[in-house]
Image (tube, rainbow, N blue to C red; front, side, top):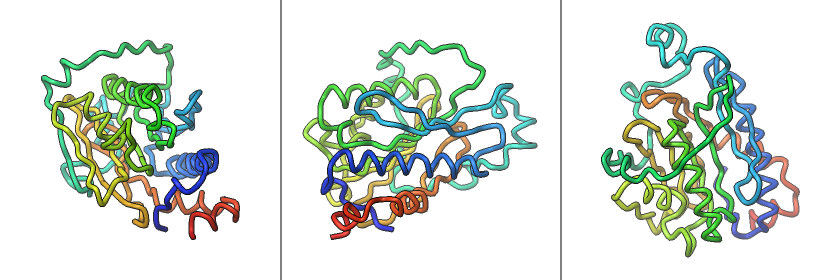
Length: 249
């Protein structure tokens, strides 16, 4: 299914689709795509951030902290060394610059369920105002600094606040090398591996393109492929005919 031009409809319409897509992604991740000791859970944030899918580890030692357990039971993950993610561009941040730019303090409640990664779908509101953009970027950078991997899906074109899209804004806080969104591919899918230094796997796309699978990292060296297109299609089937006609016109 091709990516639709979501600028043609109201923000509320995309929010409804966004929520349905999150549900499909959660169900797919929990239906065997993730290792048995991980689970995905939708989490709602106030304001323009919207719901995202967080991946949590169940209580107990992390499988990737113990090499013998990883070798025995972590078959769901794909090793980057064996099959690098199939994206258009891969870039690793400068370690020195990344450490110098640390500026966000995160205080978390003690919990037995450790966050491993987050999958976020960008809304129009995340890039329409500077305060909303800064909040989204700060959240993403803080997550990477805490060691949480990210998969960000941005199906909206660049804005005045984010001229290079959401990835350009995030990467500008991580590394001194600028990202320039291709003019003919203004939408962006990007997976961040939260190693030291972090690595971004960037796939620019355009309206009308099919959604490729994108990696969601479990560790800096291992990931699972997230079927964005099939989950997008499943969410699309529940959209009202009124808005489906508008988007397919």
